[in-house]
Length: 417
Image (cartoon, rainbow, N blue to C red; front, top):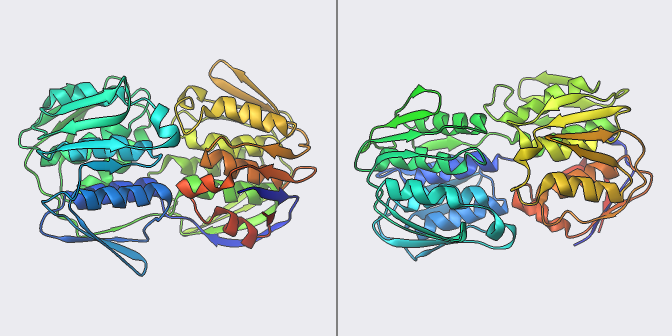
């Protein structure tokens, strides 16, 4: 599906999409909650969330959808052996640990870009903790066989904290106690999100020192309800749209959220855009923009929207932390440089920094390479380009934000297929 996005005047409001990161964590916790039917309110039904709900059903859970909620009742009898993760790296790394609690054998499989994303970091730790784990030379599919018993292990979280999240959710349900040592922890905010969800469910994890987690086995999850926050990662694109082409109000965002991508507000302030936070509503308005600098090491998903923003900020914007982008749905630094370059952008990769020289974009055709965040960034850029931006295979936004183009059109975006 091609989408055409033309120069537009943005004005209006939209509801922030539910956070897929929090949705997947809530589904995993629900699968491990025995004796309670767990209600997940404000659920996401993006492609990644659908994959997680499918995995929950294969693991034996009863999954029921209702108005504005999903109810999950854990079950003891798996309905199959294949856990299909779609293109979700979080699904695979998270549910590898959760599935390893079971004595049976499961294969975690996927499609598309997931099949080339590294998962070798899960093999050693699962074996250390009593389970069997095999990958295809460090890639999916992944075979796991439990039970996960507990013990001591070292986790490499320099590339991603997603597997660490899986262990932190799964190990309280293991038979024995565990110690997880993490010498280099990236994406600390995402780990804090995980710990917050776990503790709200009555589970204790002790972090005695940075990078050391002590986990008592045999604990029970006792939370019967989770409410999924609005997603700052998806909202960032619409907030940038407001900063570039008018004004927009996003509803349903928690300004005190642990989500790292709420740093988008700081970026908008640094570039001169107007930003107002009132309760759970965030408004972004266009003003005279200027180049800015941000370190996005802890919020790498902000690179696509902020690169689009920087293209229209006079001067050279510098965004640090591109080493976090190589193993996303695409090599995002390279794809941002190449595809925005097709529109006329001047983006350079200098060591660990992306330098974006602001100036007019001509428009044209670009390929998001199957990356949902790239497609949304290209669409936002189209609001200010000299002519339409044509986005190939734009349906990839379904991965995290299925209604993105509808929401962008509702606030004034000129979009057609």
